[in-house]
Amino acid sequence: MDTTVPATDTASSDTVTTDAATTVASTAPPTTLPPTIDLSTLPGLLAVNATSCAPEPYPPHNIIENTIICTLKPDGSDVNVVSLPGENPSGLAFTRDGTHLWYGDPYTNFGYVIDLPTGEHRERQRNEPLRSGISPDRQLLLFTDPYTYVLTIANSDGSAFPDGSTSRPVGDDTHYYYNRGPSWAPDSVRFAYLSTNDGNGGDLECPEVWVGTIDGTPAEQITHFAGSPYGAEGCPESVRWSPTDDRILLHMLGTPAYVVENLYAIDADGSDLTALTSGVANLDPNASSYASVGSSYAGDWSPDGKYIVFIVGDGTEYLLAVMNADGNQVTPITAAPLGIATSLVSIRWSLG
Image (cartoon, rainbow, N blue to C red):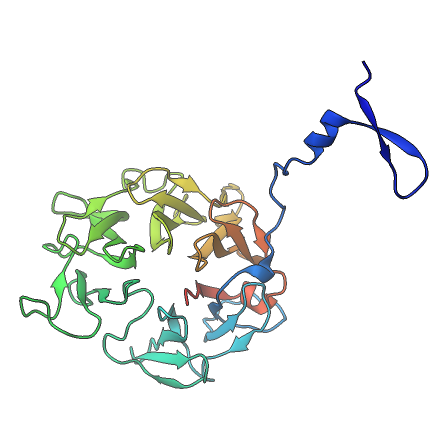
């Protein structure tokens, strides 16, 4: 029996036949993702600490230069220098609402705040809430004590706790371990951080990722890199908890001698460690020094937790890019000034 049915071509008077089963199959949704991300649809604002935000590439150099702070949209447009001339800002953090930027002065150790809508600069107030320090519900501040390296929480409004104290330690608070880089979970109860605690009263050379809570529950070590610090994963340099789920972004210093750097993600319970980038070390025995190909630096989550912005390079050529949270669909931000890509120190994505 003939299964074909006539179909009229509206562009001509010819009659064609179409297999009915094939017609149905052709309307099924595509099974592959688009090759790139539409950067114009991405939310929020990027802030970078770089030596240059000019359109031209920053030339290679051996002299430490002052840096500047610039903001730009995730598609690379609308670039603005927001730091004051003659400064040398270090560190970079948005406030939780995304309307202010904080940076530090390495010479005076003072902190400063930029009001992005007005451009006003002022000295930072004590315990002023920053994205990296204030909980998502804006109730608590989390920070590392600069003298003891103990993780500490305080009420964001400066009020005392029921016991009369204005702050209290959290995490492995009974020892002077090197605890740093805490990052809040979306629930405002848990946080991830790095610690050199070896679990036996000693310090590790390679820090591990821990997850603590504000209720005094003992912190849990979720990674075990120290047993092979020059292994494929290397040592974590920073942690950033996703703003929407239980994935934690790791910036890793890898093999050998921390030359190559990559971005990994891990679940908050320590499962599903996944390499998001694939930088490798160049181990040419004839080379005068180690080099890397495709090292990835300075990653940060998008406000909706779906994307990660980062910089990839080999020491001479760099590229600012965005990828999906699973490491796929890496999309270069080609509109970003080459000065940023070739001199980037750090990058943040506003959660406001």
